[in-house]
Length: 254
Image (cartoon, rainbow, N blue to C red; front, side):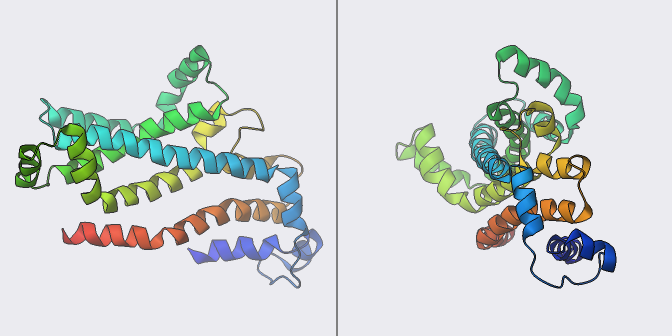
């Protein structure tokens, strides 16, 4: 897993002449930042980075809100046909995006959201929330009914039960979903490619693909584009690594 990352990092600091003279496996002779600067300016990476952060954070938060609401109804509430709805959400998660993109394209054009970040945020959030609903509903179903009944006897309404009892107890699981949703949406390519056509709205994954097929890109340029696209995601994962590990550990011993 580390070898491809080390390879693109090594080639990102090479000049084009050095790359073709010594090959991709030779170590760079000096810390050359010209290729990284060229990629940053050529691909408008500051704009792409901002768009990716906005979309990924918005998707992670919105998908958690949707997942929490639907899972609360299915896992805690008394809904007829609960198993059917859970299977429906699971089916929505496993459907290929290519099946959904055509009707979603026409719908976004109809409501005037095509080529906007909001359209991508809504679509991806709803798709990811299907997994979040399945994940959280299975956890909520295992909650102690005595605890829920005691909260209701003490006067908790549905919203108080959700935000004062369920959410605090589910923070490890919610933190796992937040990390997963952020990383998944950061790496999302097909939906942003279809729904974001203007340069000002595109994401880093699209910029990485453009580096491979436009502007006469060289292999060093492609390596630099890949490195710039991966680094923010790695930083995010390192920052939330303890939260992710804690959530998985708590989930395994409950």
